[in-house]
Image (cartoon, rainbow, N blue to C red; front, side):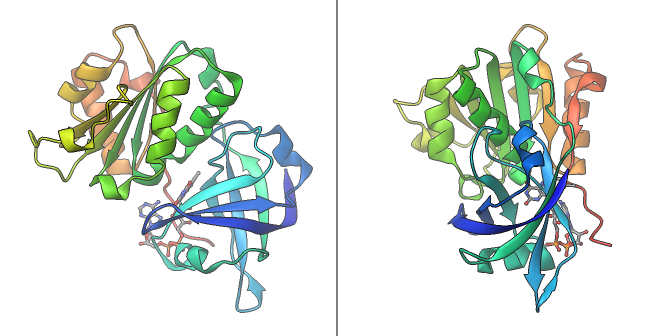
Length: 249
Ligand SMILES: Cc1cc2nc3c(=O)[nH]c(=O)nc-3n(C[C@H](O)[C@H](O)[C@H](O)COP(=O)(O)OP(=O)(O)OC[C@H]3O[C@@H](n4cnc5c(N)ncnc54)[C@H](O)[C@@H]3O)c2cc1C
């Protein structure tokens, strides 16, 4: 693990609440990272280093710059969109083991809520780089399509690797017609209204016993695990990551 002074070299506004930072100058330890791991980030606040906050590394482990993709939720994350190219940061890590053996599975289901997509973006970017043959179904819940991001990239990924993407839009009324979003050139990208229910999962889940990975807020996780139980799937074997953060101490 390392604690190195690094700096922001690029910033991308993914949508109104979500910003990606690209970071260079990190320590050697990050060269051995795996898809799905996280780092802690400190930034300068009023001339002092902030407390560290955890964020998933959203790029592939092979990518030369570290990327973190951060949703504005409180005091620290609201400062992220204000950072400028060249600003110094301190990153430590990599930490965690979520998805560490995901490439050993032939059938994979990823279930994400909101910014909980970040570990899966890392895995899918990695899968593209290594031309993985695993079959993946990504069920990504957002309130509305405007709350999602990386839509073009996910569409492109669905053409490059065996990936089905299901955008599950919880604020769209059940039964709503979302055909306006569908694109003929992206036949493996789907749009579904309502919650990520057992019926929706039944429609898209592979028939074989898939390995299930789940990242989203605790309430969403409880709901999903209940729906998996109702489908007689082994919810106990689901690998989970929650972004629960009680605040920097
Ligand atoms: C392993 C791990 C990986 C993470 N990866 C990412 C990532 O890739 N992208 C990202 O945007 N965030 C990620 N997070 C969450 C992120 O660390 C926090 O959102 C951030 O540190 C909050 O800092 P803040 O000062 O802005 O919010 P605070 O001011 O600390 O919190 C503001 C309010 O929001 C509540 N809150 C804080 N975090 C959350 C949360 N995650 N869910 C619900 N309520 C919350 C707090 O209880 C508080 O009431 C990750 C967390 C962990 C533990």
